[in-house]
Every structure is written in C-alpha cells, then in structure tokens.
Image 1 (spheres, helix red, strand yellow):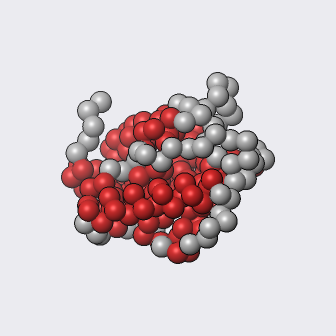
Image 2 (cartoon, rainbow, N blue to C red):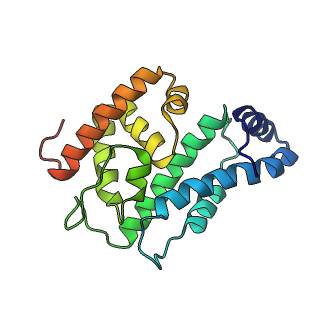
Length: 194
C-alpha cells in the first residue's frame, strides 16, 4: 500500500473528529501501517522472544487513540505526535513492569545521533530515558517534546516543527542540545542537573 499523503490523512482525521465513522474505517489502515513501521523500528533491536512485539505495541496505541473521542485532530503531524506520547508511555510502562534497571545500570549507552540508530540499539533503557526526558521537560518542555516526537513518533525535523509551531532550524537546534543534555544526564545518573 502506498504511503498516504499528509493531506489525505489530515482530511480523514478531521472527518473522523466530525463523527464520520466511514472516515475512521478509511483512516485505520493508513495510520495503522505507518504506526506499525514505527513500532517495528523500535522493536528491531529487542532480543528474540521479547514479550512485547511490534503488532501488540501498535494495537495498544491504536486502542488508546480510538478511546480519545474528544481530541480534535489538527493534522497528520498532530495525530502522530499524540501517538508518540502514547507509544512512549506504553514502552516505559512495560519496561517498568518488567523491573528494568534505572539509570542505565549495566546497560550499554544509547546513541542519540539520529532516530533510526537510536531505535535499532538492543535493549535501550527506556526507564532511564523517560526519567531523563521528564527532567528535561521540567527545564525545557519544548526540547523534551522535540525528543519525544523524533524518537517515539518518528517525525522528521519539518514534521516536528509543524507540531511545535516553530521553525525547522529551531527544531534542529533543540534536537542537538537535547541529545547532548540527555546523554550527559543518562551517563552521569543525573548528577549534573540543568
């Protein structure tokens, strides 16, 4: 199936918001496939037999999205931004429930050079990343959102800029600064603070 256009997804999201169930039926395979590609990318580095599989992750995100009838979808980027938040929460909650170690204890360092590399690393310490993102959000919410949208949502710089309503240059600068801050925070166990 070809990748749907931003305009097509946006139109279907708006029609769904307006109560058009037919639009939801048309939208579902379009966004489901894109969400599944993102989830597969995250799960690619996990050990074989991992309890949480890409399809289960997508299904959980999708079920939670359908349960949000009060959301007025602005566009495709908004949809995937909300999906990114849900995917982050699901992955972190799963990691916490499995008793993952905090602050990278015994876990290899995660490269934040770019999203595909980050997603392909085996067994990333999502709990430590979540803690670091929460700490970053307390200092600079936009930088935290930038990481969330790029890492968990798989959005590119332009899409992230559209969601955050800032320029692509601002997103690129925030992305670079956030990566450096998160690497320091995660490697030092948060000892540097802001």
